[in-house]
Amino acid sequence: MVTDSTADLPKEWRERYDIEVVPLKVLFGTETFRDGVDIDNEEFFRRLSTATKLPTTSAPSPGEFAEVYERLAKDHDGCISIHIGAQLSATAEAARVGAQSVEGFKVNVIDSETVTFPMAFLCRIAAQCESLDQATEAVTQRVPKCMVLALLDTLKYLEMGGRMSRAAAVVGTMLNVKPLLLVADREIKPVERVRTRSRAIPRMVEFFRNDLPVEHVAVVHAQAADEAEEIAAGLRKELPDFEITIGQIGSVLGTHTGPKALGLVYIKK
Image (cartoon, rainbow, N blue to C red; front, side, top):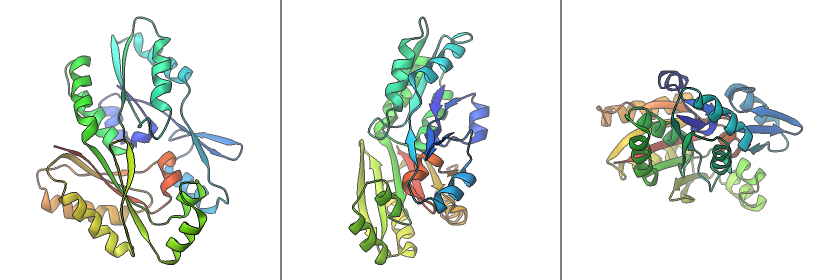
C-alpha cells in the first residue's frame, strides 16, 4: 500500500500495516520541506504563526512515485496507491504517470476525492483485504462515502491563500465567524458560519449525528488537542462500539486551515 502525507496517517498504522507514505512539499519562500520528513507539525505551525506570506504546497513528482513503485516491485506483484482528491492536488495524477514508467508492476491508483483521515481509513481497509483486486474494490466502494467536516478558527489563511476576498475575511474576523465546511462529492461546501467557537463545536457534532450511521470516525485537529479529546470522549460515550482515533492535521492541509482547526472525519455506512 502507498499513500501520501496528506492522509495524516498515524505512525502506528504506518508501521503495523507497512504503508509507504510519499510526502508532499511545503515551501516557505525559497525553503522547501518534505511534509512529515523535513518538518514536523510543531515546527510547521510555529513558522506559520509568524509568516507574513502564506507558504505554498506542491505535489510529489512522477519520478518520486516511480522510485517508490520500483522499490516495491522487487518484493511485490502490485500495489494500491491511495491519494488526496484530484480537486485538491495533482498528486494522484503524478502517481499515475509514475506508475506508467514501471514495467511489470501493477499499480491501482485511487483518487480518494478527499483529504486527511478518511484516506488513512481507506489504507487500513485495504490492509485487511486478501488481494489487490479485493482491496481496490473495497476502497473504491467507500470513496463516495468519505466525509470531512471541518471547523476553522479563522478566515485568515483562506484569505491569504486566495480562497476568499480580503474584505470578506476582515468582516468575518470582526464578527468572530467560524466557518463550518464539508469536503464531499469532490467539493468543499460551506455548511454554515457560526458566530462563536463555543457554538460551532456542538453544531459540528450535531451535523455528524444527523449523518449516522457510519463505518469509521475520527477527530482531527491542528494545535487543538484538548478540544479534539473532549469531542472524541463525548462520541465514545454515544458510540461505545467505535474506536475513535484522534489525528493531527499535517503541514500541507494546515497551510490552508491554519492553527486551531478541528475536524470530524468519517466514512458513511
